[in-house]
Length: 261
Image 1 (cartoon, one colour):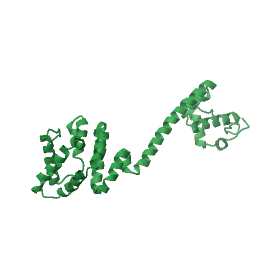
Image 2 (cartoon, rainbow, N blue to C red; image 1 turned 30 degrees about the horizontal axis):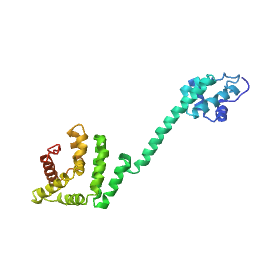
Image 3 (cartoon, one colour; image 1 turned 45 degrees about the horizontal axis):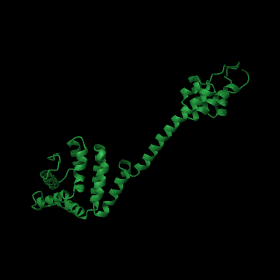
Image 4 (cartoon, rainbow, N blue to C red; image 1 turned 180 degrees about the vertical axis):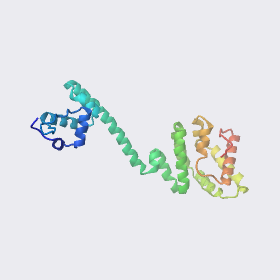
């Protein structure tokens, strides 16, 4: 061939690199021209047209392995093949969109791991006097609970939302934070644990915040993993919880135990 262009010129005309053209040759997508008398390979109109078609299909998302069959297909098979590529691209777009949305949610750690309803409840807690550490511990517990007992998590949130409207319970929770700093043998501990247990026992819906997830999990182990998550509690806090759970068991409430670390 005495007419035509070099590989560099062909690549520039088509809008790809020389390396890409050679890759197309290696895959058999475009025939490599014979060398002319000067030893150069010259690309004519047929090769350039084939290069344009290959590049266009590749840019449209067609895998390179599927381009040759499409170029060699008749009109009907080409249309069917295009429709299949479109379905694959649509699926990929949906996947990428979901990943992008997750990246946006990661800007807010809570929203990346918990449903909006749970995030809204966490946002209410500081206004009720709960500390940042308490809110963080609650969030971590919920992430774990949602993973270990997902079928009961929505009902749990319903019961928790109701509990936040219970001013007596909120006051008890605030006092529990203070009580955790007492000495383990403080004589006020049994009475306080009993008062908390009595408040729960008087309200079945409130009691579900303790028993709901455990009742729906397959084994007590899941409940214990949820209940015992977080930092090591103080000896006083452990005693308070042990007394609280003991009173619930004495009332016939199925709470796994005894607690152990």
